[in-house]
Length: 242
Ligand code: F6R
Image 1 (tube, helix red, strand yellow):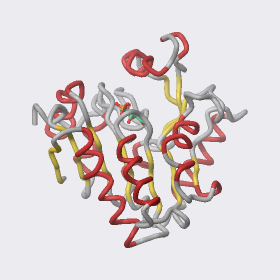
Image 2: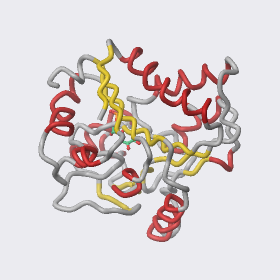
Image 3: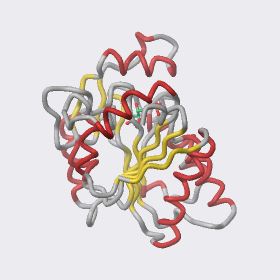
């Protein structure tokens, strides 16, 4: 585990983006696992700039996202498909067919989960980098704290704390979807390298538990301790308890 404490959000975004830029230069046909939420937006802005400057290209890159809300179509402005177009895909040269996000509006969610699990399993050697954030409750993807975690892509009931945390993006808490489709723990841990970005004092306590506490399904991010190549970029506020 490699921990880099960054001055602020901007510094964290730049340093985390450098991991991706280095990979894109070395392996232009890499496979990336991507995340949504507030934490990676600055990182994506740095990647967009690197493409616009001609330093890297996404022309041969394939991407897979962690998760999607159930019940939102890809054109809903709070869907993660929409988020990815707004914050990255529409601004880089990635072919539309090279991005995969589990659908939250498939007629058969279980079948969609099976499709996504198979797509992830078919990545030779796993994602080159899987980007993740960490929920206030220790979730990664939408693998919520529970007595057991699932290995494969599955539909998960969002915990009250996640619904509350994500209500900031919706008109009211009632509009936050109650469930999501998420990559399971195997899908995440299969990556060759995992880059975790954490920002803000709200993440300080859970980041400490995840990195240095007991490995427990009640803190899904604690399972990262079992992965051989995790790189963490935390700003000073998020790293305050480390
Ligand atoms: C997003 C995801 C979530 C977020 C987490 C942190 O695709 O899977 O696990 O990474 O909820 O969200 P932010 O970055 O908004 O604090």
